[in-house]
Amino acid sequence: MEDASENTRLVAVELDESIGRSTPEIEHERAVAVFDLIEENSFLPVGDTGHGPYRLKLSLADKRLVMDISRTDGIWVTTHILSLTPFRRIVKDYFMVCDTYYDAIRSASTNRIEAIDMGRRSLHNEGSQTLIDRLGGKIDIDFRTARRLFTLLCVLHRRG
Image (cartoon, rainbow, N blue to C red):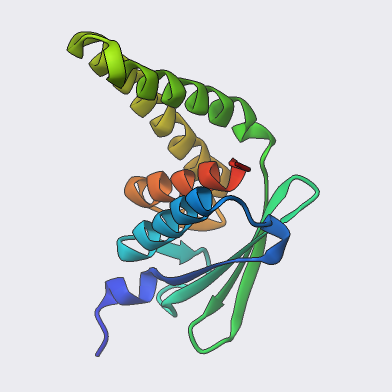
């Protein structure tokens, strides 16, 4: 018998061509974000208790993230459309703090770098919690999965 956690997780994430391609560096960041998400996650579409594992296909339509969910045997489970508007400010602020962090690494004091990093993590946590809230009643994810999914969401915003 399969482990219950195997039935409540993602085993594949596909990025649709609607997301577009970017520079090799950003494509690498996307691949790493997908790998990290698949490596460790807790993902359960509400109402489909334990019938996974799941495959997730992400696409963009009218500034919304389309999350098409199926089982590994190809049976479609559900599609959720997530407005990206609530994430706009968080992602913008997150990138700004990340840029500040990378600049600070070159010349700032350890205390300054740590303070910026705390701000960066705080924004990442805010985005992760927003993701949990927006998916509430649709997809059950834990905070660690939300962090990984938020990282992927951020990387999808990067154009290069």
